[in-house]
Length: 160
Image 1 (cartoon, rainbow, N blue to C red):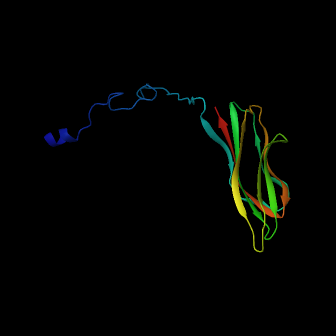
Image 2 (spheres, one colour):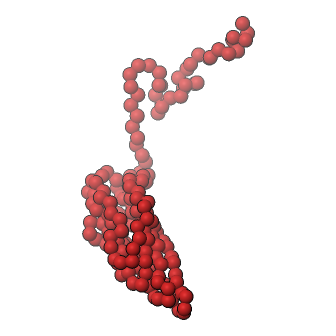
């Protein structure tokens, strides 16, 4: 008998050995409704596109259409890379464009000084603004001169 007593389950008591959710017991009938209220300043990933895009001319590298939303701000970031042609000065401008307006430009360049010079550099372009009405977000390349470029990622975050 003492063996059976040592193996029995203690009485279940809400808040003692049964967890509660937001102070509500999970015992009883009916549904327990959960709602998420995130604190101001919380950032959530809305969109990510991680497929590499590359080229050597001015173009739109990646585009995302953001729907109307309730975020206080959005943040856009793009990981980019520039490679100038050997023995040539070169540059590429990477632009964050929202609703056909350039909001941020990151210029990467390399100046060749002798035979065999070739430069490869990368960076992250970032921009943030209120955009509750939604819109088209693009990463474009302009001013491409004696170079090739890569855009590794486009990410859009919502900030509450």
